[in-house]
Image (cartoon, rainbow, N blue to C red; front, side, top):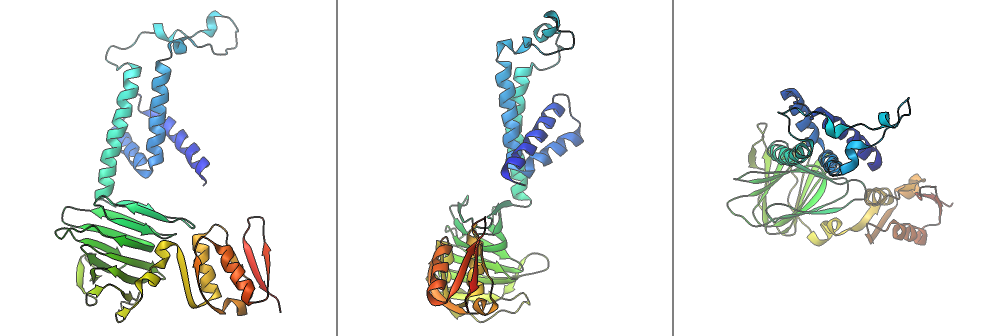
Length: 338
């Protein structure tokens, strides 16, 4: 569903809820309304927009006497004297009710957001071709790769982030009394003030330290951080925790190269063309396809801007005789010329 369709549907649902809330809703209806607000900030925005429009219409003096079309086209019948209609003494005036509801919506959203944060956690995600840099409430900064989802769940005693997919670079604000933890699958990375990257792809977890030190723990069945899975990692060290629960030995790396993806750079060292194309496709709307298995297995080396797939295509053309075609979406297919 595209953005226009989502907004249209949210507007229709908001209009439905506006009418529903004009009378005293039941507890079940109120709970359903709060759940609907929690689903998306767009729901809250559309609800507040309706409240604002309704309030503006209430201030339009002739609103109470607008003509409408009816079967018998007489002047008297075309005026609806809403202003003279009796109003129940125990009902809040419409204009006041509009702004009370708008204020109430803000309060409900704040409460709903708080419950969400303490429950599932704040969800931040990126799609294909999207990179984000997010400042967290404690001053820590997260650089998110495309196709990444994480949840932020802060408590008084700890700062915990769940990496559900993808990869992210964390620059942690120092707070010795409130450790920063990143959990991916059954692996927890614990830091106080440092910079490190966590990658969760193909069910393996890779941790790379750029600054400071981090500790790696296995997460127990109860959800608690269990025994250490490896010694402390320091700058320019990396470790891979396999999906099979095996932990590879700590290895020395150039963290600048290993975490180059956080700066939008792709570094290939004897990487297959197939894998290089997979990396480019994650960062771009334009997709590359290799139509030759032998070419797909060919190793390549080089440094490229992740947002510039054309440079990679030009590189391939410079080293291998190929044919390039483009479809209506500007996607690129590369054929070998034999």
